[in-house]
Image (cartoon, rainbow, N blue to C red):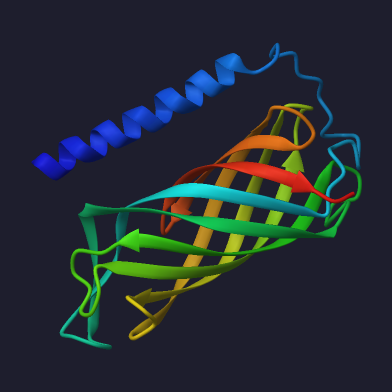
Length: 195
């Protein structure tokens, strides 16, 4: 029960923080740019520090490479860093404002059931498809895989990585980024570099 109330507080604080940042942003005037290819901030890479929450995931039992089962509850918290490098602009649909990037990173979360250490290391690699809807909002989908280890790379597993997310762009160089999917929910700040 105590863990549930901690999770609820953490999620409420995150939502309040995101709402406060949105309200402090410049006037919410948004111009539609989805039909204008290349009408988005010019960048080569997106650098994103973020915080993670894992509420549902696979767990191992039976030790080592034992059997797996699905579990909800006993959340994990952590943080990490993601870098996304733009590969194509415009991407698969040349008539709209979209890009493709390769995204990779490193994340750490606490782990109550790990065999060796009390943390997990995650190494995601995904293809990121971005859609720039307005001059303030963009959305994306990510598909790939993630290497997960319980502790310092003693037991390593390959898990799916599927996320959808959105960004609120404060300006051409900084955005608030939210991501939800398998295996976690994250919130962070994206910095767009290069041109």
